[in-house]
Amino acid sequence: MVENRPWADFTAHAILLIGVAVIAFPLYVTFVASTLAYDDVVTVPMRLTPGDQLVENYSQVLKAGSAKGSHAAVLPMLINSFFMAMGVAIGKIAISIISAFAIVYFRFPLRNFFFWMIFVTLMLPIEVRIIPTFKVAADLHLLDSYAGLILPLIASATATFLFRQFYLTVPDELAEAARIDGAGPIRFFWDVLLPLSKTNIAALFVILFILGWNQYLWPLLITSEESMYTVVIGIKRMIAGGDATSEWNLIMATAMLALLPPALVVVLMQKWFVKGLVETEK
Amino acid sequence: MAEIVLKDVKKSYTTGVLVIHGVSAAIADGEFIVIVGPSGCGKSTLLRMIAGLETITSGEISIGGRVVNDVEPKDRNIAMVFQNYALYPHMTVYENMSYGLRIRRMPGEEIRKRVENAAKILELGHLLERKPRQLSGGQRQRVAMGRAIVREPAAFLFDEPLSNLDAKLRVQMRLEIQKLHRELRTTSIFVTHDQVEAMTLADRMIVMNAGVAEQVGRPIDVYDDPNTLYVAGFIGSPAMNFLPGRRSGDSVEVGALRIPLPAELRARAPESITVGIRPEHLQAGTGEGLTFSFNVETVEALGADSLVHGKVGDGTLIARVDGHATPAIGAPLTFHARPGMLHFFDTATGHRLRG
Image (cartoon, rainbow over all chains, first blue to last red; front, side, top):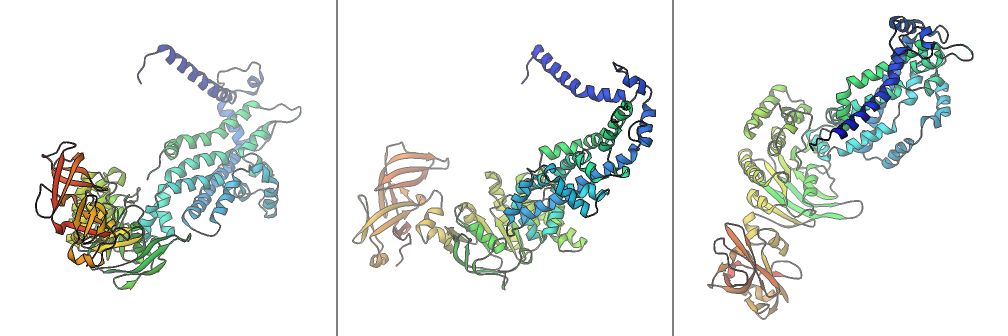
């Protein structure tokens, strides 16, 4: 469709630009705030041009946190968050891809029952079962450990369901051809199914990494030592309670740092991510 | 290389539905057998039972003298070509063809030799590094056959391998399969719903209908001497004309027409008889044998020849005439057929009357 309607073009672009501004402006303010000195940040109105404290603020939070709020350094928190997000993403993918394989390719008693059991848990948000989960984790001595941060979050009904749907679109003949070629179930999974799921895995990895990275409630419950805090908790703890003032420039710097890894994952895996969502290689 | 023997093979599902009603056949070493029938007749199920992809409810299948009822597909020494090719999408042509050999831990040198040899036979040499999605339908089908060839199996099983190809390519691949079989002489079972494929490819064919093997025989024998009404109507294009009639004395009455029964059939002929005559056996004008007259109702002009439709008694008659002598609609036409070209069937049972 080729049309020349200047007003329509103008309106469309104006709306898009406003949309971009609405999304980008808060990010910009965050960035600006993270480069200002404390006095500048608390001045009303806050200036909207970057200041000269960028290096100071960032090295301060990375090494020693905020002087007035939590003193915990942010660098270890970033590392904790990274391990947790990676663990959750990889774990969820590994478990769900195998359970989907079992559900689609094997006929065992109560197969449908198990599938629906998994499916039903889709509808339960983590908060509903958080008390019993905490009890179990505590009894297993998982408090303040990576295992405690990762394991309880590792089962994923959504991912299992997505892989199941993908496997159902793989032609049966492929499995039969592999059977005649002499491939057992494991070989078929490894040589055929896994390579075909590559793009789905990539797309899911992006989503699950961000999900793991942004976890707040669970890490808050399971960790009590500063050395195990994740960066999302760290931000919250920098905000001083009561009458004390918060160092917003440092908090904003931490927020920027917390934002970077998920953004990087999205940017680096964008090609795969889009592929995984729109195209299947069959 | 092996013969395949089916002994009263039956298949039923847990719901109690019987889909294969006891098929028996002995397929000789090197023979090309076509199983032909309409969709849903059980022909693919039968093939998949031979392949080991479906369980056998009762009966016995043996390949090369060994009963394989409980043998895994990979140990039956067969290779299968699927309708939708079933190539591994992420592997190159070379990897696709060599996958089965690699699993069997064949030495790399031997694998290379076999794949290259198969590629040469199938003219795939320049495509070995391509992925299946970069190939045309015909090329994919050739890769699927290559995957079967490199295994050097006792038997090839083809499950409607040409159905996904366009008409022209289908003819070409049909000839290639024929050529391939002449070169390799491997026992082959080929499933199709296309009677032309069956006629042209088969050493012998099995005509199936609703889970029953209605006739097993050489294509020309099945064409000349169909066992049942069903086979007579299925094999041959356009289909055989059927004229339902009643017996009266030593002849069959079809409307005003009286068709004399051959002497050897008179003793045991039933009341209701259907007379069959192939369109290509109706010759224009009067002559030796039986004469049919009707007014032309429809003409299908196919170019080389035309199909003329008209009513005789309660049945419709189709005759094949020269494409350049197409009659006008409504024109009266006369045909004659030699007595040997008539087929007589018991209308009630569908079986051919035999003396």
